[in-house]
Image 1 (cartoon, one colour):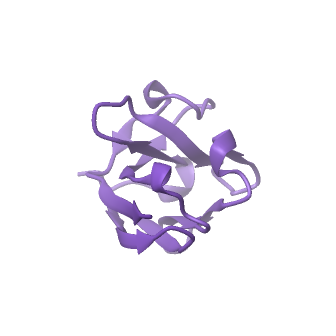
Image 2 (cartoon, rainbow, N blue to C red):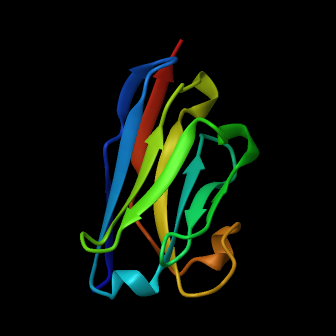
Image 3 (tube, rainbow, N blue to C red):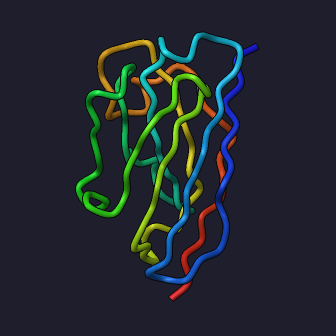
Length: 123
C-alpha cells in the first residue's frame, strides 16, 4: 500500500544540476522523516541527506554539504533533493526512504524505500 516513487534522475555534465523528487502515497506523509541515499555499483548504500517531519532539521553527508539541499512539501507529500555542482563521484542510483523513528543516518533507520532513480554525471 505504501508507495515511494522517485523521479528526476538523468545524465548531466559535471557542474550541472538535477532536482530529484519522491512522492509518497499510502500513509500520512507528515508522520515520516525522509531521507535520500545513494548506491554506486559495488558499493554500500550511502546516506546522503535527511529531513525531519516538519522540515525543521536537515542532515547531510559531508561531501554534499553546500551542494545538495533537501526539502519537503507536506501538502504535496513530496520530498526533494536539489543537487548542484554535480561531480562524477555523485553518480549512483538515488533512493528515497521514509522512517518512523528518530534516527536518520543509516539504512536501518528507515522503514520504506522507493525503487531508485539513476543519476549519472559525466566529466
